[in-house]
Image (cartoon, rainbow, N blue to C red; front, side, top):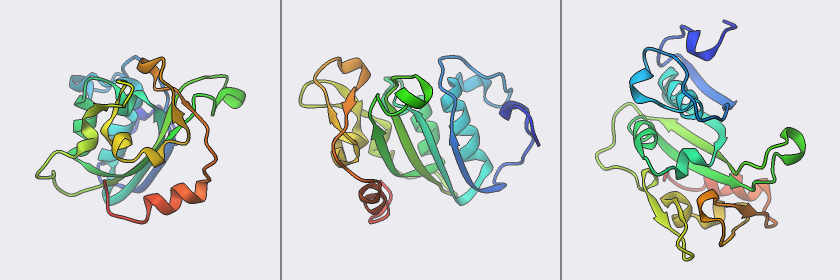
Length: 181
């Protein structure tokens, strides 16, 4: 099917893998199945992807840092009820500056769909504070090595990061070396 994602009619549990660079924005996509959640477009794409991938399937997406860092945990709760976060990588706000003309801090999320809701809510649903008092996702507090840079002390609200010298192979080894977080 070639159509807008909201108009596709693939059944749930259909795909083995979903990989994408989800659109960013602070607006909703009209889709009767998801309207009640009031997800912004990037969270909508992740939610629908998780629903359409089979249990055990993988979802790997590039999304804005807002998905993991926004104050309201509703989208993260929705995701965590369906999938384990295998890992996440925080990229610098400069990553897509040359190719896309944007200075957005971005995350690459790796999720694996489960066939049942977890007994306990995973820590990555919640936020915590850095030593500078900036609010950031608990995953990055527990795994600062997954930030490809250093958090600046200001502005806190944007979670700006600057590059360190870490390679993609370091990130790959870290994500696949342990159990889901």
